[in-house]
Image (cartoon, rainbow, N blue to C red; front, side, top):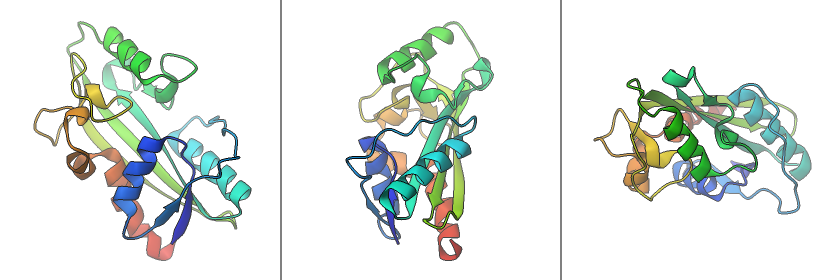
Length: 191
């Protein structure tokens, strides 16, 4: 199955390619396509908005994801606004700094990463899957192998290291995106 990848985030594209390599051939989104406004109020809505826009623009089936970090002590924030938690333009370092500032002195640091993957076909058919990785927010940034909130997120199913301290292969065994891909794979034969 050939899909146009809606994400402009090179790190996400690399992860998805590694996770889908044996079932999907991802091609990059058209270079001349502008940004797609993520106006949805949920991760699913944003994933479908992005995949739909790319499918129409590229005249091909498209795959998009939307990911959010939900922190219990912040009532689920940053959630759907994770990429722009510290404002526009999006900036990973500012987002992490604001998150750590808001959690300073907070004992409950439980959180989860949620990813929704959506395939939108040229005919408008939508197939989607979700993955969740539970964990906690570290007291400070650790590690340099990752992006987004990886340097502050410690997965519960890991060994105490943040996502940014894991190798890419280790992260791909535990991550929310990996779990969404597993769920999506089960849908592909009927997709």
